[in-house]
Image 1 (cartoon, helix red, strand yellow):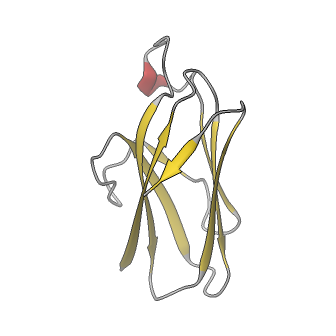
Image 2 (tube, helix red, strand yellow):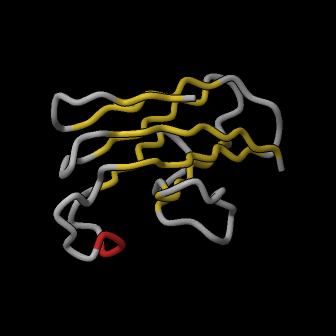
Length: 104
């Protein structure tokens, strides 16, 4: 299993975050994320996309992990893309509000 990791920071306090993965080659990539800097694994993660094709991971301020926090979605997220083999992909991260996202 191969893995690529990305980190993103959002400054919007209560927006929905959309992480879109388009696998351009193999069609067998999986998308996971954690709030914070903890690296998501196949068995330990806060968020996961529903299917391995046309993946869209939605992080909502109403997700149980946020426990009704006022600044629910603000912060750092660590995103992991897992696949059985090398692949070419496109990753897009957007929000429901106009706010800045930074990747590193």
